[in-house]
Length: 319
Image (cartoon, rainbow, N blue to C red; front, side, top):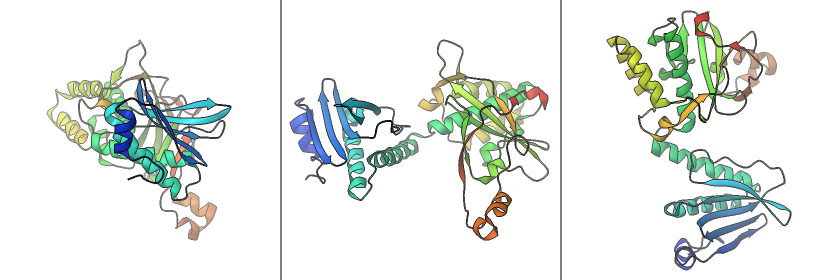
């Protein structure tokens, strides 16, 4: 049975995919939305019309799905394709999800696609353990932990991030919140107000880390970092046990794909003082700006911040 204007999967498989017959099926005319199958090499997906210069959605964890921009007769389109034949039923389910969102009234077909990709990505992350963002975040925390221990400034118990504390490290009256990105600017997500709010009688710094692809230079994976710290702490049974226990509280699992991806530092890590170089963000701030009644209705705030040009070089010996 067809799903809206979408060809039934079994019919598509038997009449097009298996015999290698190309198809461009106009599922929708406005917005233009086409099911496409190329037989050589076999690729299945969709093409949808977008505005010139419109940003394409990200594929995130969906590593076998490629999103690209194409021009046909002067018109811009987004193509979403996979060349992994075993995943054809899966991308077909995603296409159906996009179509259902549009049929339900979503007028922005790119937003419908982005939301579908995001939901499928969440399913992949849950099925496969640690996500890319989680692995990158943990990588940054362990990089800072290694630097602090090597400088002789802390023991492993300074790392409190695995306990879902407000911040990642506590060194006496200093707190460190580690933010790690693989983008080419210091753009970092801040989840909730507490991440930019020091604990009472503490001073808070954000440590901004930029990671890049290794190229031909030296690089390390999350697995490499864990091995290095495990070896460093092996001479102290209590420290080794603490590290092992804290690591188990994260979604880290040795050998998983995201734990084997190698990175290098793309730039010097920076340390930004919260309250001096960048303001603390807390409920008091919103009460002063919006008033107590309106501020009380703010349950959660997530921010995307650009720290480019702020801070000084992170030097663990300075603590």
